[in-house]
Image (cartoon, rainbow, N blue to C red; front, top):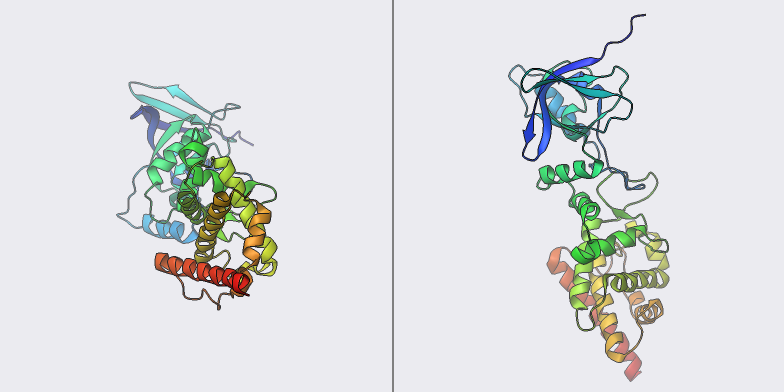
Length: 344
């Protein structure tokens, strides 16, 4: 049996701004055979791309087979070479040869082409490509983020996750993102593993709120509790964690069945976080500690008076107008409960 020969691709070696790249052409099935999409695995935090879109990829397959079809270059990255899977051989002038070992496997990351290549594994259609050489996973993510930050259909939560991985001082630069991710990651958090980061979710776990939605609710809380002394991001995170643990303690049945209740729907999350700010500010003004016990005491007075089911008190509340109305409903319900206590 004859020994398999390496694949040889003739390329031009040059620069794309500050990065060295290879420009060339290759059959789609060869590029498919040696490349992969580094999709974010939410359970491990590895990867950075959105899940594969079957329809998008199938549409491109149908298109690229048409007589006058074309595409911009596929963007790839040759991951650092470990066992001689690939090498660049000098040619003449700017021309070089990219030699890929026959048993190299998936050595190129699909930085910006996973849906174009996804269903072309059996087609030898020639395609142009631009390939970085030896970028780290972090550098790949930076390139991907710049290329796709305005891409239609790309999850804002996935881009936020990228920002978190790339930030030097996340707690300082984006405290709302720092807190949201800690809610998703900390043991003892009712939100652990339940925020949708925009990647491939762990099988069996239900993502009930997006990372972006939780951030917006946290921004509202931080704005409403900005009086001196300022909370540090770590302190604010603990307060918010205590609040949501109190919500679960007071409304355990509603929390267990989030699909049929409004606690984790957008309007419920936003409204409850504003009530959290109200309670925190009152505790601070009175010189009382605002911890889980304080939140449980405050919530117990009124939240059970509200029908949290999807067909209940908050049904039909949507958008910013709906959030404002929901906040007023919760505040009024709370005010009446306190009035009853005072006046018997």
